[in-house]
Amino acid sequence: MRWGVLLLAGWATITGGLFLGSLTGTVVAEQFGFTRNYRLLTQGLVMTGIVVPIILCLYQYFYRITGIKPKKAIYNWKKAYHFFTGMFLAIGLAFLVFFLPPHLVGFR
Image (cartoon, rainbow, N blue to C red; front, side):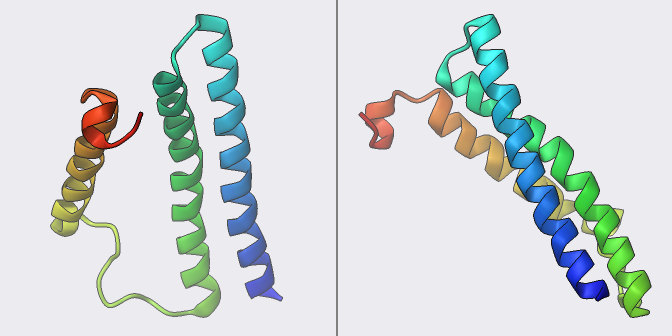
């Protein structure tokens, strides 16, 4: 029963974040006349801001209901280099999509 609630909460979090991100991006693009790229950026920021904190709370709930404590804390400053590597990868990919001409990347 607990696993079902946890799975349903994860699914609802991602679905709700995707819906609210999509809705917010569309409304912002129409209100302010943003281009497609800025609409997608807004959608990504809103979805990330909603989904990540809730998923972190679900991790804590998961460890409480299972009674398992991880050997090492999953989110700590000793593993911050993984965070920064992922951040720089995302920034690099965003640079390729937003700032390079589309024909160089392969889109027309």
